[in-house]
Amino acid sequence: APLKHLELARGRFLAPSDLEGRAKTCVLTPQLAEELFGYQDPIDDTIHLAGDYFRVVGVLAAPPASATLPGSKTPPPQP
Image 1 (tube, rainbow, N blue to C red):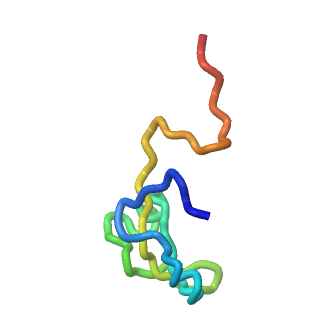
Image 2 (cartoon, rainbow, N blue to C red; image 1 turned 45 degrees about the vertical axis):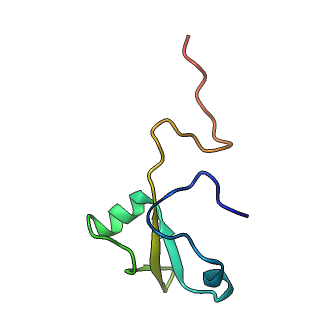
């Protein structure tokens, strides 16, 4: 199923060829990219996860401050 409401800051999403070829590639959230790489560009670098190495192909854009995830609970309006 296509990913909805996600935008890239840089790089690309996983391609069908990544999935078909079982490529060890990943797309990071902006928070994780900053935590792991600081201010360095993580594209084409690798991360170590669960005993394996994955090549970073993309980084998601940070969601707008007012965005909510579908299905998430939003606080009730304040009177």
